[in-house]
Length: 134
Image (cartoon, rainbow, N blue to C red; front, side):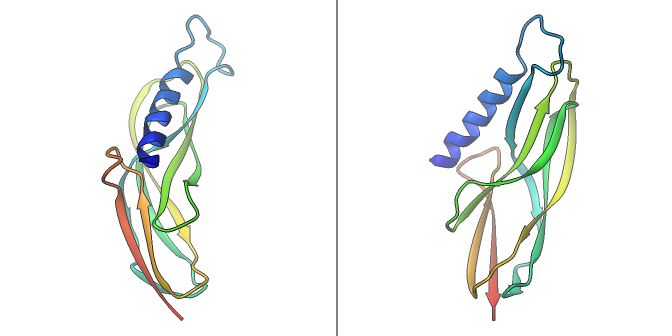
């Protein structure tokens, strides 16, 4: 439910941030949106204190979008993760650019960890499970 709320909030924020009428100053239109992952690839196991990278692909919807990092929406597991993109500027052209960026996970304790990557359907994240051995 929290993830669904965040996805709706991000979409509304994106629309509101770039809808200033009559303002052509690129410094006045700004929003941060959490973009839906389209694919996530990476290992399913590692050892304690050994980082693993997941390649996360997501869409940037206009030319003003810049990837700023990954947002972890909670600190417990399953951990919910979204790709944060800042949209700065009022005169942006629509794009269908797909970016792929690495998300690093470094476990400090052995066990099984579940990561949920935000998708367009809040009820169906991309799920990755990592088994960590000593």
